[in-house]
Length: 318
Image (cartoon, rainbow, N blue to C red; front, side):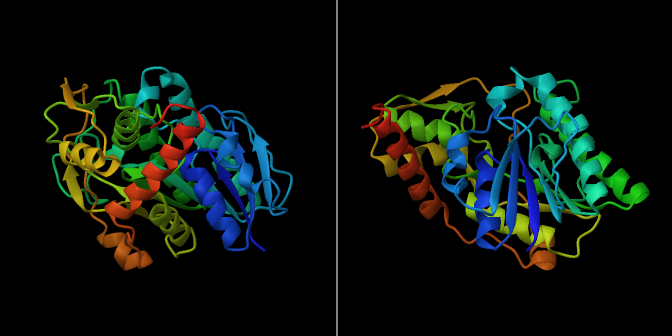
């Protein structure tokens, strides 16, 4: 039986990944400081003998106490709403935290996967974005705490691969959505769904012509697993859905799917907010045989149902 460590294991993506690994017959150790993760996300796994949870901040050296085969490093606040509140924590998690997890992976002679981000491309002037594109990032802007620390984490991973023999690989995650996203996440899918279900105005920043590509979380975790179990040492691979749509189109779609009476209002575009985001997934198709399978319609239905149930339990929804 393989043993996998998932840092950020109580987070949105991390908890889904833990469930997927358990379904593959692995022993799973989730590590999370519960800064943005939530124990509710893993409570369904706590009775599984193959699952363990360690409350720990990866900015401090990590000790597992047993042999580990795979380290999935997902620890980091990733919500735009957190960039202004926790910039130093984010930068230290992605620098010192990545260093600490890499070192324990080396001690175990384990395979390491860094969950990086499409934010590495910044506000791109190339579309779709291939892995060979170096990006267009403001190094001192309000999003730089996340963008630049993830770029540093990628560079650090590659340095350990080249100089220390780390069996490492990097994925760049594009916009992902699904159940367990935080209502105050700051990204458009949870924003629009919670606003629509609450009857509040749907807030579109700018004129809504900026584009995003939305990947359902089950597709993403399948891609993460395939990447870890592929012969991809030293490689960077985009994981995301190449189907592109405008933010305004998404707002209208969610308004229709929820049957909400909410109006759509427009506010100024935040500084350095990317105007276009679309992955080139040719490498993922060729290397992993991976591409998204869940349609936006089906994924939004599942996500809306989860948010509706959650809000009804708290007495905030229709």
